[in-house]
Image 1 (cartoon, one colour):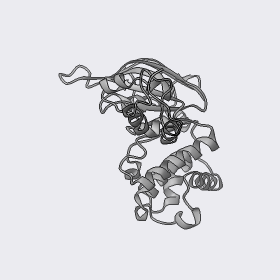
Image 2 (cartoon, helix red, strand yellow; image 1 turned 135 degrees about the horizontal axis):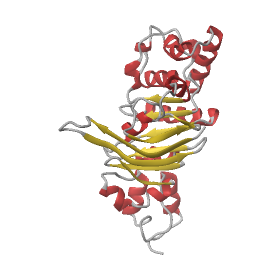
Image 3 (tube, helix red, strand yellow; image 1 turned 30 degrees about the horizontal axis):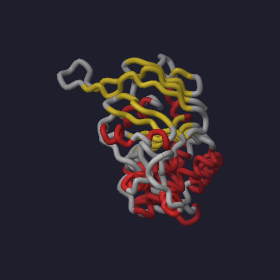
Image 4 (cartoon, helix red, strand yellow; image 1 turned 180 degrees about the horizontal axis):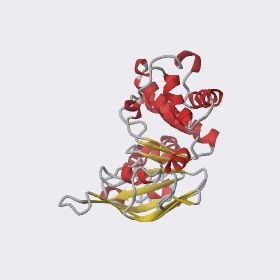
Length: 285
């Protein structure tokens, strides 16, 4: 599975007095199995961008290839694309609607025309990947679950479609620290067990730094930076100029003079920070 985007642009309310250029001339490639973190201030175009990747939004111009298929061309069967590209919106638990967790997760597979046995296999697999106990939870109402469990159940409904691309828009927003870590653990498990491309949109710089192979930085509808986490987060001045922060460990290392433009390497995690302090690393070349 691969993704290729070329010169993608999108305008809301085109031709009206309050038209907004949400995406402009965005291009990138993602190879199979990559984990991409997407960051940007509110209104930078992150959500608009990801909604193009499974055809929810259509571009004004540009092209998107999913596994070699140009989904911007006329005649493309979008339901086939959405089998391959699963998108979980922010607060996906608000979309739970069935009377049991099992039926909610099975909804997508059944819509694919799978048999009851095949749908059952998908539900069990998805619940295992998101760490929900099948025997304990499958027949419960989704509305009786905790906030973190609801979030995982909703994401399981996307995973049950077995997409080659899993897109998660702020999957930890509004969760307590324990549920936050549970969701991150779930995402790692899904990636390890499925090999899917994962695209994570988040305002949490620590999560992005610790999980991403590459980071995309959006600003005013443009893709303005991309690179490995250590490359992107080494440019603190630029990130701050576009309204973004740094991972907490990077911020602290900068304050202590252990990381910055005049010191080699970029500290991204608390473990790296502790190691740097313990080794007596000093500022300067």
